[in-house]
Image 1 (cartoon, rainbow, N blue to C red):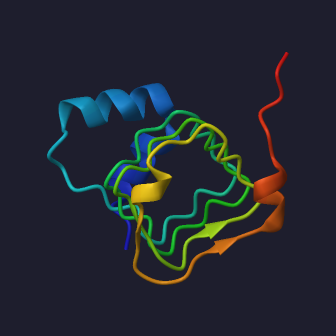
Image 2: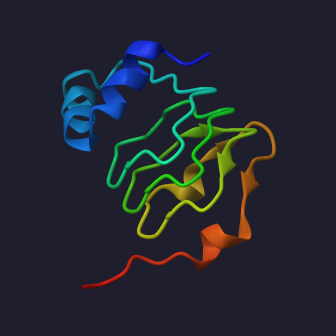
Length: 110
């Protein structure tokens, strides 16, 4: 079950979240089973976070850091993963769901 304090900090915005993470780099991040539907997480530091069972449908994840994040039964649907880093190091504890539209999304250049 997600750490509600951490979920609330994340929902305050990426700048606040990333600053909080920098100051607490040794804290275990538990976002498991969190409903983050539609949350803007562009360039969020999600490294080593437990995202098992999290719902990230419609989330803006472009440029986010997934280095050694843990996923399993995580739902990525209509999520922008462009420019995200660390995806090759994600730890898969169980299958996750990634909708086909996730692969079609691209950041729109102005």
